[in-house]
Image 1 (tube, rainbow, N blue to C red):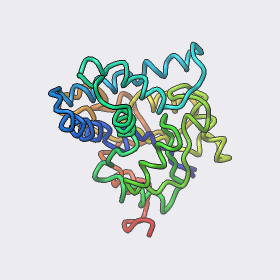
Image 2: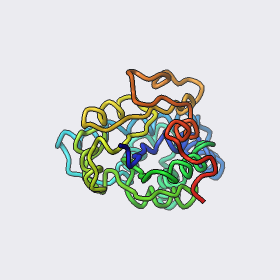
Image 3: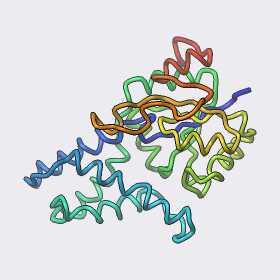
Image 4: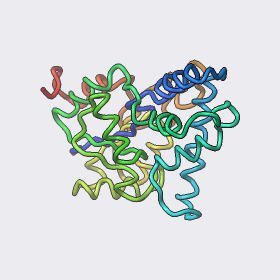
Length: 239
């Protein structure tokens, strides 16, 4: 029996791309820099997995995602003329990941799911990042898990197992909810139940990946309300 729902956050619960584009646009306006803010968001995100892979493979000790995001920002800044911005504004821009907006169904959908299950953020984001995002976007998690708690970055298998252990639950009692097939595959390999949520605009209008489930997941839905319906949650939500 499912007792807890563990959520991927970036792309599944929040729209990282629009949040980064919004804040990059403010920086561009302030400094009068003319650059493609959509390309900037995509390039910054493209450094995400490679930077974590060094930690997954043991080539680097674990550091939290804020540090990786800042290093990745420094890596691409020159390409977009952002090397001229102040250190204060650079750190503010790096914190754009703390201010990401939710998808339209996320707030109410999570509340409905919370009415019946433990809901937890199983993100690669560090604790302060997820806490700040949750305060701003009104995401009422029961628990924040993820890389900084378990000491591993998804989709490293032990990340999922340790998250379940933190809740004193068996892996089969936890449902991994994600918009990314690779995340679900890794979770399923550890015995978790799986739910694929379609987020066809995560990468804007040019998205080519994760437009369909890659295999027969336990649940396949278009949004969190559909998942709540399938899991028998109340229509009115938690409060």
